[in-house]
Image (tube, rainbow, N blue to C red):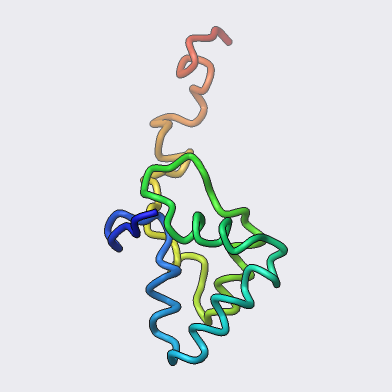
Length: 104
């Protein structure tokens, strides 16, 4: 599998690993899949997921990876959707019925 560039990957795990000293990076890449209970192949797929992929790293596993690398989950995510808070979507939050073409 050809590695994707940083701007095309969903997660910045490879970059976080590269910030570690070489011997720690190598050990961490070998240890993390075992700690997570997954195969090396699954770990490689996860760290190379392309932006826009419907596949995600399970939340608990992503939190574990982030803590192990001394990062926050937000620092590892490279594909954050632009989601507006619900109250800003509705101009008049009391008019929910009409928003969904329903009568009161």
